[in-house]
Image (cartoon, rainbow, N blue to C red; front, side, top):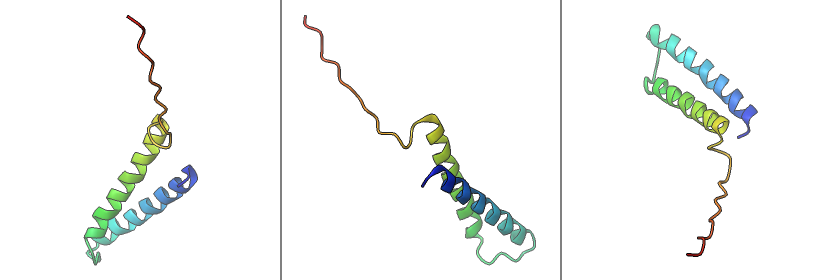
Length: 71
């Protein structure tokens, strides 16, 4: 996913989480596990965004091996 798609997905999941919390408070939540799934999805997306900011995800490491200097 692109950064824009991740941002839109995060906003969508946060909105869904709000509605799930509202339903939970009014005792209308049909599947309580949906609340936990939404929280995990938010955490996953935030982790990916943070890893991209730090340069961990989305880049292919190019390790160069230096030859040993002669003894």
